Image (cartoon, rainbow, N blue to C red):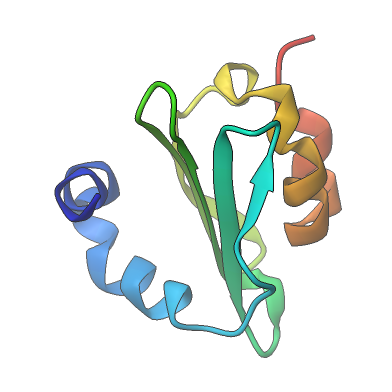
Length: 104
């Protein structure tokens, strides 16, 4: 997992590491295959947060890094490539982002 995070975070490693240490709810399981969790700055997830999910079946990572009200990093970058099962978790993270995620 560490190697995959290093590869996918690119030049955002230190920011991602900081956001993953921020407070957030316990790790959850969606659709019996996606482990996910998030951490957010005290100012809120829009101001600085990281959402991380791992597909235990296909060994894929889904990652969102937010900063100053915008998305700084999205893996995969196309929100339609995100599984529908992650929508409730994303809704907890930032409701507006959940509306853009998952296939239509």
